[in-house]
Length: 210
Image 1 (cartoon, rainbow, N blue to C red):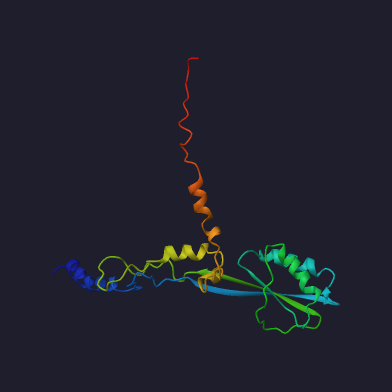
Image 2: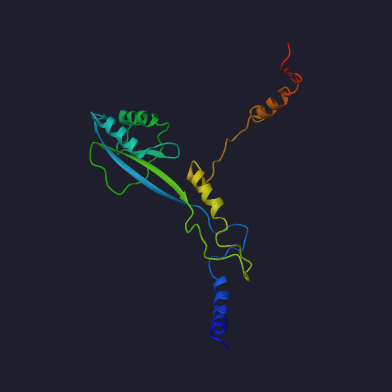
C-alpha cells in the first residue's frame, strides 16, 4: 500500500467522526434561542425641601441623554421618603421628554441612599443569541437525524435584534381585557367600502395630432 493510500485510509474514520460532532439540532425548534440580559443604571440626585436641588434637573437630563433612553427602557425612582414629594413629579417631567412614564417601582440597588437624596434607576434589557453563527456541524454525512449546527441562528438573531421590548421575549404583552368589535373590524370595513381602482374607467391619452 502506498503512503497516499495509507494516509487516506487513516483519515477516513477521522472525517466520519468529525461529521458527527458539533451542535445537535434534531427538532424543528432550534437549540439557538434568544437570551435576554438586563442592566440597571443608577443616578443619585440631591433634594431640598422635597424638591430637586438647584441644577439637579439639568444633571438628570444630561445623564438621560448620555444613556440615549427611549422606548423599551424602564425608569423608576428609589425614594426613601414615604410621601409623594414634588421631586418625583419633577423627575417624571424630565423622563416624559423622552416619551417614557415612571414605573411604579424601582429595582433594588446595592448601595444605600444618603439622606436628602433619591435614586433614578434605568433598567435596560437586550436580547441576543449566544454562539451564533455556529458552523461546528456540517450538513453532509449526517447519521444522527440532526439539522446543521447553524439552524435557527439567522431567524432568531434577527428577531432578537428587531424586537422593540426584549422583555416581551420572556413575557409577552397581556393585551386588553376587552375588545371593541367596531375597532377590530374598522380596517376591513374601510377596505370593503373603498371604490375599486378601475371604477372610473381607463384614462385614454392621445399623442400627436390635434
